[in-house]
Length: 426
Image (cartoon, rainbow, N blue to C red; front, side, top):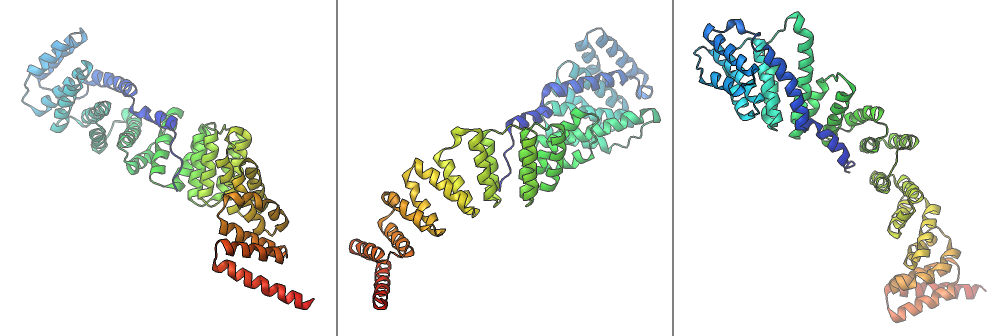
């Protein structure tokens, strides 16, 4: 059985992790801090000439002459790997500020691949590369860059430890988000489990991604736990309640599903007619037809227009499958008043439940809607049960004259024999 389809609203909210504006804001703050640190972190290791060129470029950039700053560094061809990596790092920042992401990525890749920077600068550059790749929707490369960042052997100084831990935690979220965009659900969950949300908003984003991954992976137990957290945060989001019921039913936790549904109703979660019908189908598919039928009844009360013949028929079949015979009879009787063809299943149910007096009242109304042989044989059986043997025999003979059959002839022989014995006995 399929779980509820994810609501479009939920998917739109989750797509926040792909909003260019959000990531550009994150990038902006990070790159500004990286830019300010570019000439302090490891600058002492630059050759004098490289330091001079970088200072010249920095002055131009500060005077809003970014193109000229880029030109200065483009023309500079350092020989030392450290100088090359440092210059490419700064060029990458300048290109990004100049809104030239392709050139920025090219320079940052050069810097990273040289592996010549000190660990802190290497870590920052790798991280920036991942962020820009993500902003360009290259999620595969972004994920790789982020994971390479985590693998850098960087041990922060005591003063940097708190920020480092915060950044590591943030990378877990970003790797999960990059994998989410690729629909790599196992990886999404793997990285989100490591993530410790720093605030309520980030926690909500993480849980939303995590539950999608768990539902896609059919990890119903994990999904149930995640949905419990989401319900606490967003108790009025009916999508979480529905998915919770689905996850519980997938684990054969019928009672838990019923309890969740009851809690949702107490929470005054507004269910649309479509929601009621989906819930009803969900219970039916999980072999709880009685609950399925009652949810349809709740739908009829909440949305009277939904009490169509098709929905009433479904409800009657659910009651019948649940062996809730009085309710099934009531449902078929109500439906038969709207459409006479439903007198036939009502008749059959009356006979099955040995309510022969009621069956004989309605069976003639069903006659136009059922095949002649089937109708006549049912009537013979009904008359026999009412001990109207002569009437039953007459019906069997009429059937055999029109449509000779082994069944009709068997009844004729049986009833004649019975009547003969009754006559002899009298």
